[in-house]
Image 1 (cartoon, rainbow, N blue to C red):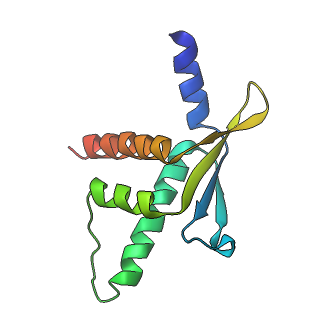
Image 2 (spheres, helix red, strand yellow):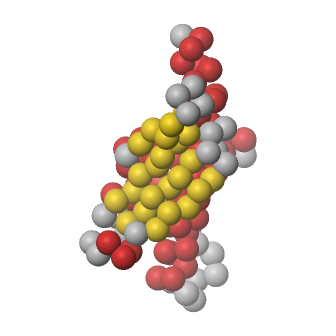
Length: 115
């Protein structure tokens, strides 16, 4: 159990590369890098918020719920993360489901701090 907690903490502070492919064409592929998994998950939320702003340019405030964010993630051709693993000096790949789980935890914690 202690090893899991250590690895979980270590991963939160690990360099993370976000790979995004919104469309079917390979030229739609992009990547971004972040200093931590949490920063990366915030980056995914920002990508969705920018998408909403482009679709609703005359709306002054953008609001959405987590199910809409997850639908957006699911409709992307590819979304994955490479997270640096200090113990092996390698990057481990993670898929959309893992990303959605991490976003859920991040947003739940953020909502808890707002109370």
